[in-house]
Image 1 (spheres, one colour):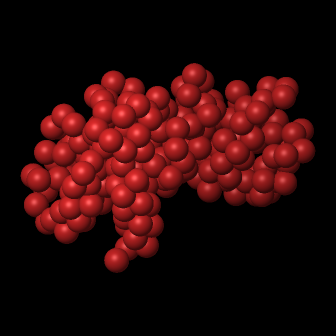
Image 2: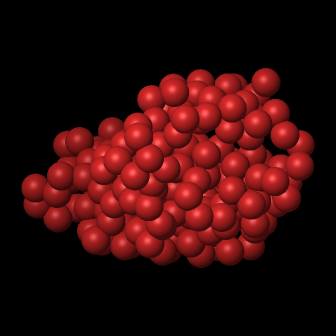
Amino acid sequence: MDEELRVLTERLRAESAASGAPGAPGAPGALSAPGVPGVPGALGAPGASAEYDRLVATGDHDELAAVLTEPGHPLWARELAAFRLGVAGDRRAFESLVLLLNHRDPPRCASAAHALARLGDPRTARAAAALATNELRVAYALHPVRLLVELRAPEAVPALITTLRRRLRPHDPYRRVALACVEGLGTLGDDRAAPVLNDALAHPALAEAAVRALAHIPGQR
């Protein structure tokens, strides 16, 4: 089994086992989590274990896609279905994976980014760039930034420059996002990043990474 799938299935097996009573506010299977706006209510589950086993075992993409469109499925089931469809290249998973990419729980973001990188949907880079540059959601921008670097799409460098420049404000609390931008711009090696990387040298938490990143920029060695 793929390592990313193994980690995800172990996490979601535990979530399914811990699902609360149907409709219980705050149950682990709730779909009303703030990080996934506009998704309908919760289903805790007698029979959650059977549903989990079914979704792990099935090879029927239509069955997985139905979990994303039918009401009442818990978040763990939607995540499992979206991940499996995404890594298989089934674009019906796109919308669900983008919502999960901006979720408040980092493991969901990481799994969504992994699946989106393998989905092959041309909308992915635009969506990731929009999430990475959304200042209202900057606390959840880490995985969109990393996904943009992995995709190496045209949107990546402008989005990372924009996000990093905002993080260079005094007392900005989102240093992990800033560091991911610095490292990503170094990986991409685009000379448009040189000015913002030079500005990052003045920030002690970013300076060492900025030096390494600039070493990959033409004319900055």
